[in-house]
Image 1 (cartoon, one colour):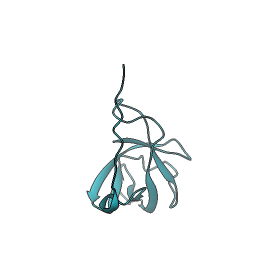
Image 2: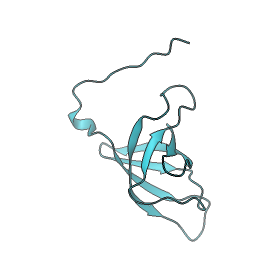
Image 3: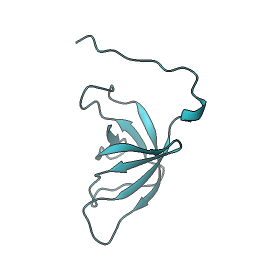
Image 4: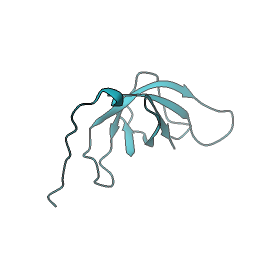
Length: 92
């Protein structure tokens, strides 16, 4: 899902890696990303509304080569313990 770093408005793509781990891909190596930053949905693509909390940055690695940070996220919810899910449908 297309995502934003709430503090800096840097854009990336949140990707699931396991039941308890996410990664944020394609964030420019020059963007200021810090452990503790909150990641939210951007609203781009109109699948998810803007501003939903996706997770929190737990690790940032900036490789010596390459264009993007390597960012790990802690999901905002424990997917193993969800009991109910609300489905949102666009009326447009």
